[in-house]
Image (cartoon, rainbow, N blue to C red):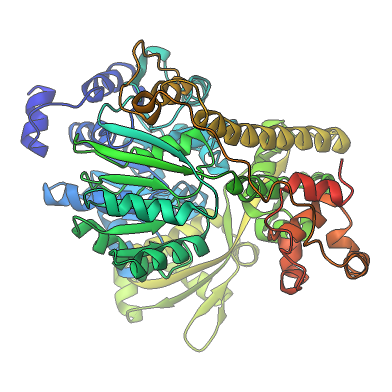
Length: 639
């Protein structure tokens, strides 16, 4: 049966979309492939269809729970056994999925990249035949990409260590340099990289310069003058989502807010309400829409500036997936720049924080384990930034990360002893008796620390964890894990702490500069003197000969001009009382002495150190939030 015949039989489609068949053929021929398709162009089929032909399970790694849910519903409706593992599942649902995986009933299993930090999950996969290892949002693997995630950098090693037979990387946003990074990390031949281009003929790309005083009026005018249709209004901050949704509701529109600060059940209600409507407006932070399959989105508005052209391309790509004309409009306001820049600057650790972290990591001995949560708090480095720093140390050869483990387990029998005994062989029963005797018994639950039990009964950790895993899989025990710790090996005992600190500081400064440059690229696009569509796709390496004819520049033949913000000429009129500020800074020297630390505090950027010391409750916290970080940094003595 040909691929086209299989496509019709399993999914009911008569033909492939551009690039799909080429990517599947590359995967079959080379054992690895990269698919770079625009948002909504059908990347998922590139692993869904091959998964049905391969013996074993396809592991799909994705950070998007919404994508997992929608795709699984679609696959199950086609009679394909697919599932996801994430934190929203009940223990019973997790047990069923593990049982299906163990008994080879699953064809596709969707997981988040963080799942590979779970030693029990990794151990289960070692007992599984993985026919295909598919990595969605693969641009996250690039150290210099727009959305680098340290957990992604380890996925290539995970695929190799689990003996995955094939690897497929997928993304909607990759510049030529990021394509090279993905191919290098996953060992994908360049000839197996399939890029279909980023141009969307049905998207009318509009950019309208506004001021912060006129933005609401312009948005309302657009919504009133255009034919109603499913609409997304993207904002940067959670509070802005709430404010704008209220504005639209009071103006008579059917609008609701959506952001990560809302309870999960409420987000689900809002999402489903919007999905079922042909005219609803959702005012959302950037996570909304990722992986959601709604083809008839007619409008995407950017109320706030996007942080990069990669983000912008992905977000506007959610409009017009049905091929019908759709409008994407950016309300370009320079007053958004400080908030976006502040997020970037807030992630860069201080030199003192990096130095203390590196010195701790280099003085723990040859083999050691640590809690990353404790490291984050102790050295005042945000968790994601900490993981990036540790990944850099690994890339530089100073340390090597091992398999994370849980420092503690709680367990309790769910059936009587005789049923447990009948389900285990003699060796397993003997081991279980030893584990129970070596554990601490509470009223209902037993508690054990694997390292302590190992010493008491003379059995290695892997056998203890595997038996607990087996008991949970067979629904004999309920098992809870806690206190995740990360193993490390010091690979270079003679590593120079000062040199490593300087190197990491330089890397973070480079990333900071790259992120600020990405924002500048957005500002450059706004005032571009030419076809905006061609300028946007050109950033991703696509060259078009003719203007698109339907962007705001092509329609008006005029380049946009950003109005000067009245705020930009303001001095620090709202600066804190000097005496009060100096007293606070002196009394909290550990948290505020460094100019970068002080600037974060004044700009309202939360860090572990500020939270731990309760400084986020201080009246001065965030008092200069509307100022550019660079100006505040200079005012605080930074250079």
